[in-house]
Length: 213
Image (cartoon, rainbow, N blue to C red; front, top):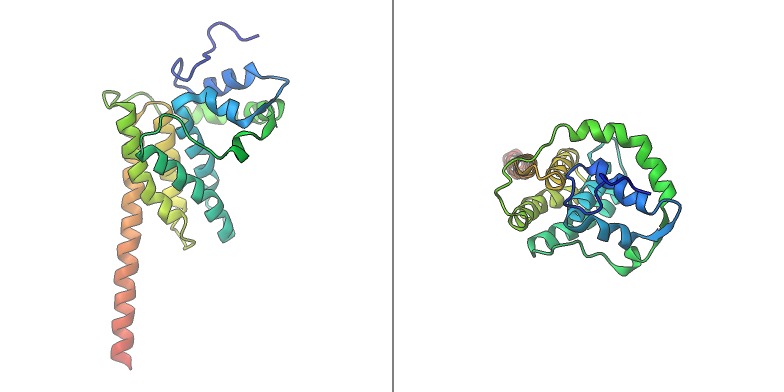
């Protein structure tokens, strides 16, 4: 049984750790559909899913190119839905109809909870006067730029934008719109800077080769 102060709905508490505890504890000992867990997150599902796919890419370790694509395509898909103004994420039935043991998720959550709570302390509600749907659309647009960079398997093209996506997603979940905007804008700026450097670098090399031959 859940304690009465534990939130049941997504709007009851903005702390991700408390929300996870509430959603997972309700189904302890059960095997449930992934879609059921996502429905319990309501509109915060976008932030949670963005965090889920961006977090592995933000770790600065060598990864085979398919990993970037496998994680990047869902990010692109989610950002597009945010731009279109969807209230909750839409995922294929092949994913939402799959079942998962909640006890396994609870075990993993309990192991990482203290780290999640430490990370959460960096965020608190700011710029809350911005409507959530407008904020989601804006973050979807700037997140799309970072996602395009993630899909390109070049050095430094995915780690920094992915870290920015993690910050942006946590900002969305915890209504820290300032952090969400800062993370998204810095990620977009990083991508545009890399693009300019690549274009100017390629132009310089081509000019040098033209003069050489």
